[in-house]
Structure formats: structure tokens, C-alpha cells
Length: 393
Ligand SMILES: *Cc1c(COP(=O)(O)O)cnc(C)c1O
Image 1 (cartoon, rainbow, N blue to C red):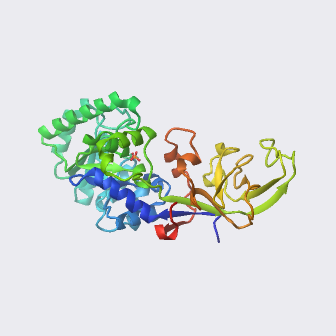
Image 2: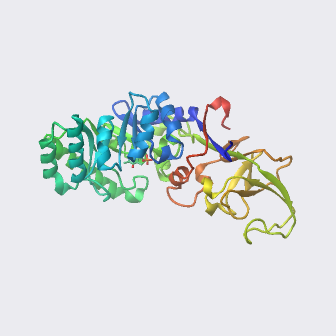
Image 3: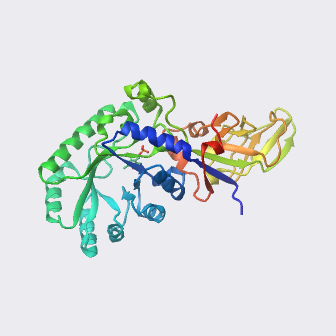
């Protein structure tokens, strides 16, 4: 049965993004592709093997259920790292599968040791340090006990990584806080090392710090949003453009890799003065040709785009009129000559030289790219395409 819409993932654009990101990451630093949130809505099962084809061999997920999905599609050689939730009684599974995981409190540390004992195999862990985000992580005050416990359990633990996460490196408003976090991380990491706790991978940077604070790259970067083709924020983009890094690059190193498409379900004429759709949100001021499009807020088309959104039909940006319904939107196609039932509708992506970006799709809240993407339902079918299948303008 057909779904009401479909998603295309452009491999050429992904290759482009990854080669740019690897260039700014540099040769001495590993690249971890973050595929939490269903690979930011792109679909773990589609995105991960594609990233592997482009040379990625290290993936970060949030939780055990995502790790399970990733593990089913990944290559044997690729490594998986769980950065957030996994139940204590699932740690044995992770150890058995060589999946590394974050340890951010003593409860998890003890559970990791138990799991390793049961599996007769070391648990590969990443110590997460509290440096000022105040979310999860070992506090500076925990340092002596932490060292002691790790030394005690040397036979059961492999400290693969030492990590932290920055509290908003995409905004210059957080500059001082980030600087403090970097200093706190360095101090803590130095203390651990001095006391015999060394990790192969010191890793702190996600997309924004990789671009704005290059000295946070260390042994590995954990890149999410940028590999999918988005700047973490406008500020990060500006910072990149004014940095020396950009001097040697051609314009626009990041390309959105996702396209979201559907087709016109039905066409209709509405008379001047009539209200269109629910309530009185939209009144026709002219004879209007409307196209109903079988995608609504249940499919991730945000209801706040009522009377605001735009879609592409015949290469033109046409307005969404009235309320976004659960399963439908209505577009005004009065100015699209020759429009027909079944014609392609682009919700995100390019059509005949025009484009709708994820940020223009929903430019209402901060970090909206992240949220818009992850809301794309898992059951919309995904297809891999390459540039020559669907050329960019
Ligand atoms: C989400 C996440 C990342 C990736 O962040 P981006 O801003 O998308 O690059 C990296 N590290 C951790 C711990 C995360 O939760």
C-alpha cells in the first residue's frame, strides 16, 4: 500500500557534507556520526549504511533501542556508542555486543562492572564529566572516588572515552559558559590522567563547537546536525564564513540531504467569500483553486504552519491556506496554470529550481531544524537517491 508521502535521502549531498566535515575535523581526530532521534528523522536503517558507504565507522545513539536498530544494519567493523539511556539490566547485552556506553554516575558504573563480570569481558565505557551543563556527569567533587572505583575494577572496565557536552555552543551568548566548560574539562581530564585513568578518546565537540571552537576537537568529534546539511545556528554559519577555514572552500559546504514529497490528492474551485477548511482561519478573497495534499500534523507537518507554510508545486512556492489538519493541508494553486490531480508536491527540498529548506519550512523556534526533522514519522518510506536522479538548482 502506498504511504501518503515519501522521503528521499541524497547520497551525493551526504558525501559532500561528510567530506567537508572530515576536512575541518582534520586527520588526527576520529569522526563519530550521531544518529540519535532516528538519525535526525532521516531513518537509522537508511542513513547508517549510507554513511558507512561514505567512510564512517563510528556511530553515536542516545539509547539502547536505537543501538539495537543500528546494530541490525551496521557493518561488523563499525562501532556503536550509547550516549544516554540504557537500563542496567541491558548493559550485559551492550558488553556482549561490544557497544560502548556513557557512564555518568556511580550507579551506572557499578552496573557496568556487574555486567562485565557476568559477561567475563570488559565493558567499554565513556566517562561523562559534569563541566557546567548541569545535566548528567561526574562532578568534580566525585573525582577521588571515581578514580578509586575505576582502579579497583580495572579488569572489568575499559575506559574508551572521556567526554562532556557543551551547553549551547551554537550561540555566542553562551561564550563564557563554554569557555568555563572547556577549562573544567581540561582540569578534570588532566586529574584523571595524572591518577592513571587514561582514555583513548577524549571527546567533547558536537557540530557547533567543531566549527566555532576548533580546539575542542581533541581525539573525536560527535557530529549530528551538520552531517545532515544544517548549520547548528545562523551564528555558527556566520562564524564559519568569517573564519580562516572558509577561505579555501567553495561556497555552501553543507547541503540538506533530505527531500520530502507527496502529490496532489484533489483539486477544487472555491467561490469568493467562502471560508476554506475548518473555522474561519481562511476566507477566499477571489475565485480560488485549491489543492488538497494528503499530509498533516500527524505526519510531522507542524500545525503552527496553518496559513503560514509554503509548498512547491510546478516549481512555484504556493501558500498553505487555512488550518493544517491531522492528515491534510490545503494549498492555493490559483496561480499554477495546468495543475493536475497527482502532480508532485515538495514539502521539503527542490523542484524546478525553487527550494524549500527545513528552516524555511518552520522558522519559528530556536533549534527548529532539529525538531522539525526528528518529528518526521518513521513509517514514511525512505529512498536513497543521487544527484543525477534529482539535480539541485
Ligand atoms: C545530540 C548530541 C550530539 C550531536 O549534536 P549536534 O549539535 O547535532 O552536532 C553530540 N553529542 C551528544 C552527547 C549529543 O547528545
